[in-house]
Length: 177
Image (cartoon, rainbow, N blue to C red):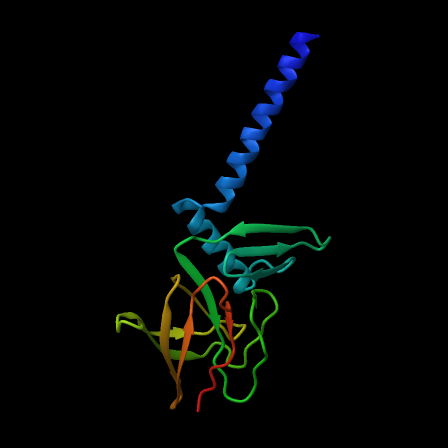
C-alpha cells in the first residue's frame, strides 16, 4: 500500500512539474517560436488559413475553430503587433484586430509609411502594400509611442499610436486627405 502511495505521489509531482513547464514554455516563446507565431499570424492575415477565425490582442493570438474550440498563443514579449487600415471614405470601429474578419477600404494599395518613435528615431521608412484585407501589418517594439505618416496617391495623414499593454492592435482611424 505504501509503495502505491509513493508511486502515485511521484507521478502527480511529475505531472505538476510538466504542467508548469508547459505553461511557462507557451507564455515565453523562444526565437524559433516567435518566428512561428509571426508566420502563423501572417498566414491568417493573408487568408492562407481560412477554416478558422483568428484575432490578436496585445498579448495573444486567439484561434477559434469551427467547433468554437479556442487556442491561444503568447506573442513575443518585446514586440507588439498592430494592423493599420488607412482609409479615404469608409472605415469601421475596431480595437482588437480580427485577422480573419476585419476589412479595410484600400486593398492592395501602395503606401509610403514613415514611423518614428518619440525620441525621433526612424523605425520604418518604406513603401508598403496593404493586403487583400486593406491592412498593413506591423511588428514594433513594445511600450513606445510612435508618430506615423502615411501617404497614398497624393493623400496623406499624420497620426500617433502606441504599443503599450492596453493599446489597440487594430487602427482604423487614419483618414487620408
